[in-house]
Image (cartoon, rainbow, N blue to C red; front, side, top):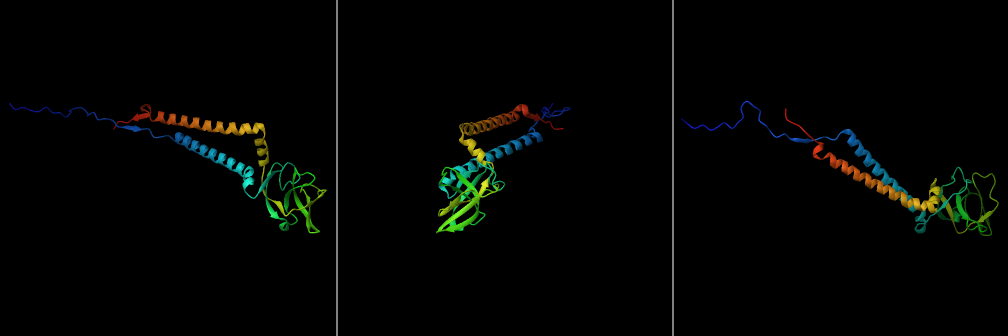
Amino acid sequence: MSDQQPDSSPTGSQAFLPTPSVKRAPDSRRLSRRAFTSALRTFGVLLATFVIVATLILTVGPRFLPYQTFIVLSSSMEPAVPVGAVVVTVPVPKGDLVSGDVITYQRAEEPDIAVTHRIVRLTGVAGALIARTRGDANLVDDPWEVTLSATVLRVSGYVPLAGYALMFAQSPTGRLVTIIVPALILAAMWAFEQWQRRVWRRSQSPDGIRIVTPS
């Protein structure tokens, strides 16, 4: 009698093979949330950067660069320059001025008040240049004449509504808000990012893995 090795291959039954695990594909809703979160974060960073840069340009820039800014508190120059705007002025030689230019100046009688009006007439008197001004919304010329200095601040543009924001930022409440609000925004963004990470880690856990067996 010859010895026979036992047959190790299964007979009459299917072999048991390890079933591979396949990660569940992210659904469209999850991708949409990620895209929305990324877009929201980008928008927040861009908005904060714009506000910071604009504030520095309007407030700190005039200390180092050759331009000055003034807040328009009256409607005398509407519609050309609306109330609440911040006008940006540059110094120019008085000889470059012409009728129709908008200038910002201080009168000797009221040195603490800056007036932004349009030149309606220029007159040379004994070597001096005299300007007559008027606000666009006014029906008559200003009741004074302005003796122009060697250089005059001519308006080159304006930022609408920026004056309201600057005046609010300079108030006690505004100073508090400018500190608290950015801090709250940063804290909210950090908390939201941490929550997103926890959701992502949970989706990668064994509970989030689907077992697929071959057919």
